Length: 453
Image (tube, rainbow, N blue to C red; front, side, top):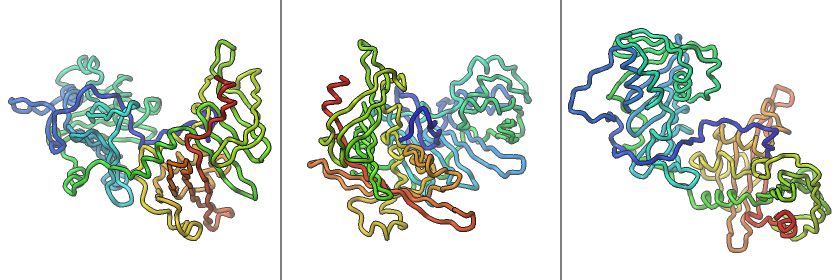
């Protein structure tokens, strides 16, 4: 697993988070083109910069198109009552939409030539989000004081406000730290739209606000017309996710005639390469004894793929902690944090065909993915990039072979990671790594639990 203090976590766009909603929208999923304002008075289109920006802060139906001067880059951002997100007209694989229906909010992406929906999104308590606007980065309700201070009647204006520009960056999907590479925004009313010109990370970009109150999302309409809805993963996948979330497992990897095993527990982590001893770390939270943090430890005996019964003792070095926070799952980023578990929709049935000669017949339910963000996250989580640098070894796919048997605790998940490399720069070669994961929820060492309690 990756140490938190050694490897930064990747910021990946597939992981969608937001604030818990207080109430759900009263609109149905079929009204994606509707305006958020129900008024009998006719709509008066904005005619100056201030009224345009105020519209973006109060309404929920409009479109942004973002392009470079030579049109080498073109993205469309959609904002409707029930759909928020973006896609590239030239590259639909960059589609990232959030859909709200009567049951909740779910993502919709483009993968392997098709639209793929995700599960309903939920907060840390497992409660589903109900309002897509509550969990999306938009300009709705943002920087009202700044907008009130703008002069009326201006058809051209330079937006220098740092707070508004940060809100603008977040709406585009960038981190607020990108403000250092973000210019002032030149706003001008042109024809029936508002054009916002700016430089972002040395690229000149032009954003056009258009289709006020008439925006629809073609890809979403197509998806719904074909009967599309939120994704429901197979029981094998949800059960596997539950097992990984226990943060108790034994990971085995065989290479060069020996087997490396890692024992994961919320309070300790050990690595074993022999049948006589092992080493690792233990988290202790006993302020009354001046023992708070993560401490190094050495154990005698051994643990196998399913049991810790062979452990005869553990000696902890308590002279000084090597990390001040007594949480092993933070010190090491455990596999329960894999991006995969929130994006099971990107798994296809069966092992990657490249493993057909290695695993002629899976032991259980098999799945694989080639989604790049999931692969990169897996590589860093398992610290593969430390031995196989991403600059030399290209991630290709990840396969899962899931054999579940909860009654006798023999559940096993086999992971097969495929990569390409070119040792001499002239020809691509393939390699793979195999991990066998077992002992889910069964890695406690009773003597150690008593010692650190």
